[in-house]
Image 1: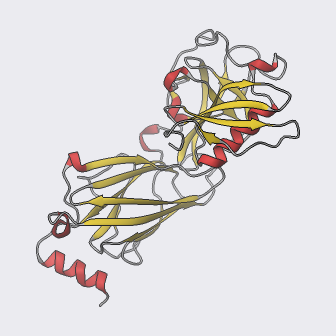
Image 2: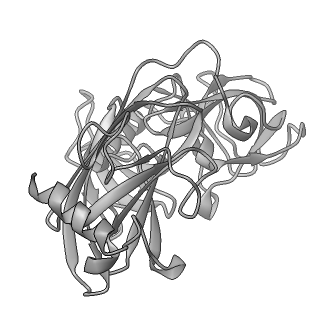
Image 3: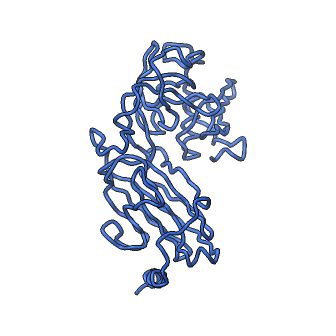
Amino acid sequence: MNARVFFLAMAIGCGAPAALVAQDDMRTETVRFAAGASGTTITDRITGYESVLYTLGAEAGQRMQISLEPSNLATYFNVYAPGKGPGDEAIANAGTMGEMVPDLNRFDGVLPASGTYTISVYMMRSAARREEVSDYELAISIEGATGDTVQNDYADGLQGGPDFYRVATSGGGVLNLREAPSGGAAVVTTLNNGQNVRNLGCRMEEARRWCRVATLADPGFEGWAAGDYLVEGSNDPSAGTTGAARGSGAAATDMPGAAEQACLQAVTEETNNPDVVLLSSEFSEAGTEVIVGVGAGQAPWQCIAYRDGSTTRPMSLTDEGSL
């Protein structure tokens, strides 16, 4: 009997439940994969009764694999289907070997529904009440192409939804409209905060929801936008369009040019965060200085782009730049 199995047997023998955490000791972290990636590894820590809920999007039929490597052998995780969480029945408990748990703290299963999954990392009661600490690495991957249509969609969040979305970005920034559902895809144009677009359907890629949308005002554009920043909208084509970005036929200041797009891509790769927006740019003979906002708070990053398409390594302008 290995150490993990022995520890688990002792905990169960003492009457400890698989997970026992107070609601106010839970924190939630949103998982995003880097552009073009199918997985990520998270390094984190919990103490005592603290637990962490990692949320990420996936579709029915895809294969999710999870591996937890903790410093404290009393650390385990549960996997919850869309719409479920602590207090509900989990689809797998990594402390109990079974069909989707080939070994302790390993999950390998084909997902039953499309939507946002939750991975809850916690410590057993016996360790939690002693305020023990667990440092861990959590590796998550989602593989398998999405089908032609969304299957078993939880709460109709991908196939259905409103006929129109409205862009809702923090701080009033613009939202990138991309050629494909990926933070690494080329930017078609940008959408203004408050702008309405037509909903053409959403999918899960890179652990997040991407929605294919079409602009309402001429000239028309279609592309993919991060669903985190879309809320129910209307068919009003004029909302949020004052100063809105336009297509290739308009002035260069209305749409990210080659320098801006090069820096948007460079910042995406540097931060592993596909949520980037153009804040400003200033041309000079020495190079174009581009300021890019990263994340929900649009933390500013600086990048210099040159005529040959190369850029300097992006630099955070604040301590929040890596968020």
